[in-house]
Image 1 (cartoon, chains in turn cyan, orange):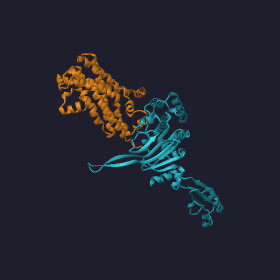
Image 2 (cartoon, chains in turn red, purple):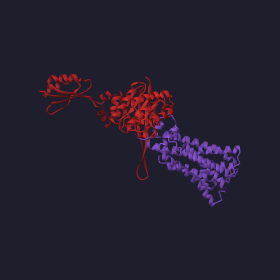
Image 3 (tube, helix red, strand yellow):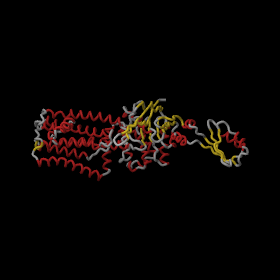
Image 4 (cartoon, one colour):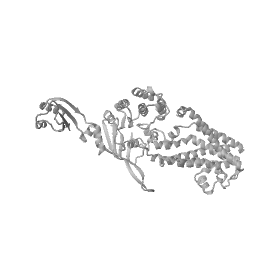
Length: 324
Length: 257
């Protein structure tokens, strides 16, 4: 595997000046990104999440050559983003969810033609890629409308296409689903999944919509206050922050003996909640605890009416991280 | 790319026409002020109307050409303020080049054509003794002046990287510089003249080249060949502007999103 993105001790400080008294001004250094280490390999799909102001966009901007890092090092496709910005630009595609890189007054078709010249993409290759995007993202319906008249969902599909026409090695997406409706979100996610599935394009995605992460990425990097607080799979995040699967059972009659009923619990299983009449019981499963065994054991002490297994909610975990 | 810009601008047809007319009238008014002054006085700083008119028109033409080529750099302020400048950083082209080429304003071409006509009239009035060196000097002067004003536009815009609301400050130097070079530099007070004409190099835009073109002696006592130094001054200005621009780009802070 080849490393595509490598950051070591990456920092970005902003100096904020505030007023103190009538004439004096205070200077305060705020670290938006405070020492980030990150290695991304070719073909990976990486979800980059964090609360507002955590430094997600700032990190992306340093990786794409927009911002000059205050410290540490970063390399993307073997290039240093700021000094080698124009070379790097040919290797990466960037979508800023709340900025448009299309020409406001031109239709998509002409914007793409301009981009072809800017990136000097051979006409045949360009046409092939555009055809694929047109089909998958359903662009034809609005390819001749000036960008200013497009809906947000249409525009975002247009933006993603624009970022891919020069066949980038890395695709950076900063909140690509922000403000989109359900249908547009699904279209965007489906398309990104297809891009990622080819294994050639590395995708780095920041988002607030955790469904994006669950649907698209295996690897999750959570940052808070400019530092990485988690780097790994969604499962390992749950494990680390103690999220549990839950089994909720409805019984026809309460278990006769509470003692006996508690005895059936295996290792890693705890009774979380019991309704007043003990007709509904909720168990939390930690570690390798097995829902099947629990259900079988419960069935042997009381007749079951209904049962459900609830998967842990990633949003809860993230909320817990944010609130710390 | 330019063709697409033109198409985009023509999508607002009426406003395009109004702006072309407006721009043309305004440039005409600038030159009228020179005529008005000579209704009052016969000479200005010891120079008769044709010489001063030639200075005004060459400086005006240079300014118009610089405005056509890099005037768009003014848009930097908006780009910085909104963070929209981010988009230029992700493309494989220089930031300045993109800034200048996007929203290229065709209407500014009207002023350049007008400037050319005005210089032509001024040359005829001043009875320029045409020869190859004279023609060369005139071309060099206009090109250097364009570079000089262009550098000024860029340097002025660069300040916005540090200080976002510096538009008026920058205009003081660009538009102020054009007005300054409309008249012979010896009419200004000593301090003002030293600072602008020599310190910042404005004397090289039109004053000295026109003296050389018309074989007039310099009341300030510099030799005739000073008029040939414009390209040097322009090169220094361009180098300084480039350095400032690079530092500014490194300093770009973007905006939150």
